[in-house]
Image 1 (cartoon, one colour):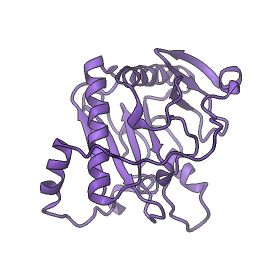
Image 2 (cartoon, helix red, strand yellow):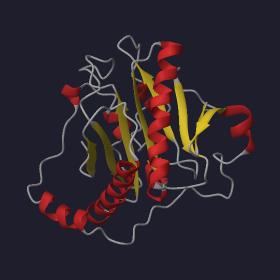
Image 3 (cartoon, rainbow, N blue to C red):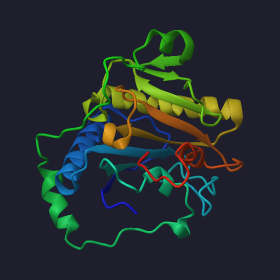
Amino acid sequence: MIDAHLALYRPGRQDAVLTPDVGRDMIEAYRAATAALQAEFGSAGFMITFAVNWQPDHDAIGEPDSIADAGCAVHIFGRRAGEMISPVRAMTLQRSRRRPPAPDPKLGDRLRPLLADPPATVIVEPPPGELCDGCAGSVLTDQERWRGGGVRVIRPRRVLIDPHVLVLPVRHVASLRDLEPDEVTSLSARLVESLRQFRLGSGSTGLSGFANDGVAARQETPHVHLHVYGRSVGEPVNPYQRLAAYLPPGAQRPV
C-alpha cells in the first residue's frame, strides 16, 4: 500500500532487551534507511511501527499465537506532506483488504547503493515552536510513571485505549535519527517493562506501537516519543482504529 517502506529485522526474542551493540546497529540502520528513502522517494518525514509478542490476525485485532521467538522488526514508512494513504489506516484493515504497491523490479538495485553508502544530508523538519511538551515540568509531576537509563515512561494526556503509555528519552531530542545508541537500548528495556506492567494491570500479552519523525509524518511534539499500546487476544478493538477515528470522516491524511 505504501512504496516507501523498509524494515529493520533483528533475530531472537521480541521481548529481549537490545544489547548495546544491537542498539548501535539499529540506530545506524535507521539513519541509513531514512536517508535511502529520502533520496529515492523524496520522503520528508518517517513513521515507524513495531510490536512485542504480538501480531494481528485476519481481522487486524487479537493475538493468534505466541511469536516471542519470531524476531523483532521495526517498519519504516517514508512520508510526504499531503499524502492520502496512511500507514495507521492500513493497519486497521483486514489483511485481505491490504493492497501492496505494484512491484518495481529495479527498486532493490537503486536502494542497495543508497543503503550501503547513505547520503550524508537528510532533512527532517521538526514541529514548529520553542515549547516542548516532552520537557515540560508537568511531565514529571503529573505524567511520569517510572524511568531508567535516561528514558521515562509517562501516561499520555489523551489516552487512546487502556493500556496506553508514551516512552521517551529524558534528553531533549527532536528526531529519531538523533537518538544515541544507549537511548535505543534503554527504550527497548522500557518497552519490556511496560509489557510486564500491562500484563499485571490489564492482562495484555503483547505490545504494538508507533512513532512519527518530522512534520511530514504528523509529529506534533518536537521530542521523540513512542506510542505504546497493550494488545491481547480478547481486545475489543484495534487501537489504530481508534487513532484513525480522530481524523475527519473520509479523510486519509498521514498519521
